[in-house]
Image (cartoon, rainbow, N blue to C red; front, side, top):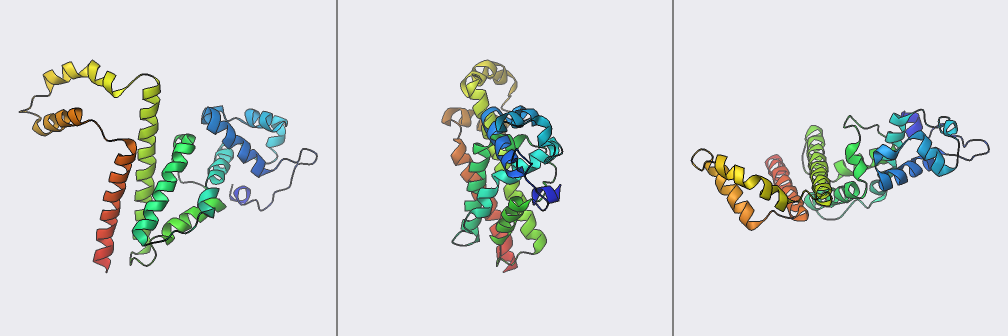
Length: 235
C-alpha cells in the first residue's frame, strides 16, 4: 500500500489518463456529498467516466481507496504554515484545524480506527503535530502521547457533534428527549442515593447545555493545561 500512497510507481492509464490522485479526489467528492457508504469502485468510476475495471489497475480495492482518501484530505495540513507563538498556541491551532476538517469531511469519523497508512500528507501532518511540541523538553514518547491525546479529543468531540446534529435533523432534539424521559428520571433519580447526579442534572437542565464550540474550547484548554503541567515539571 505504501508505494501506492507515495506514488512511487504510478503510470497514467493508456487512453483514459486515470491517475491515483484523480481517483482519490473523485472518491472524496462522493463521500462529502453522500457519505462513505456511497463510495464504491463503481461509483468512483462513473464519476470519472471510466470503466470500473480500469480503476483496479491503479487501486487494488476499497481498503487502499480509503487510505488514499484519508491522505488526500490531509493535504491542507501538509501545506499549512507551521504556526506562530508558543507550543500551546501551535497545538491549539492544529486542534482547531483538525476539528474543521472532521466537520468538513464527516465520513473521516466512519473510517476504521486502525493505525493509518502513512502516506505523504498524513506523514507531513504527523511531523507538524510533533514539531509543535519541539523545545518543550518532553521526551519522544511524551510528545507522541500528547499528540495522540489531542487527536483523540478532537475526533471524539467532532463525532459527538455530528451525532447531535444528525439527531437534531431527525427531530430527536434535547427538548424532546427531556420531555420523553424526565418524568421517569424524576422518579428514579433519588437525591439521597444520587446526590451529585441529581444536582448537576437539575442545574444543567436549568442552565442549558454549552454549545459545541464552547465545549470544544473548554476541553482543549483542559488538555493543554495538563500537557503544560508536564512541560513545567520537565523544566
